[in-house]
Image (cartoon, rainbow, N blue to C red; front, side, top):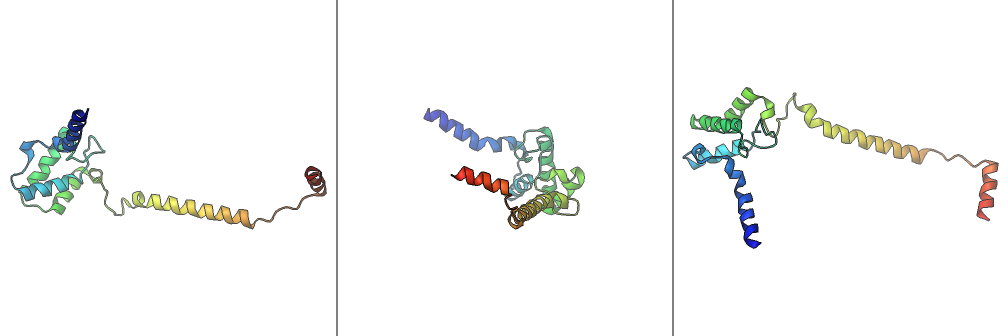
Length: 148
């Protein structure tokens, strides 16, 4: 049982590296490190919840190759990200940029929390501030009989 758990732990630890084949890796370790950093921020357009570094999809492989080609051509990380976004759109980014187009996306959770908090405060104030209606004579009589 221990042997099986050890094998499973090794497979889980190595699984993210399985998407990147050895022929894709760059010879320069510094460039490869930059390629991995860039790839970690790009979404696989097929898988959608994985970075291109973690995905086995052919499109993810093409994007990894594109990133490595751009790095080999001497482009900066920002130039590569801008190129990929220009080619595939903002959706390719795992973490969208904050700009006028994504302001609604970033602002909605805060707006919902603000509105919900305001509504809760107003309801609480209303319930505390509302005066209680005095009991009628019939209600007083029923209450006295119930208490005896």
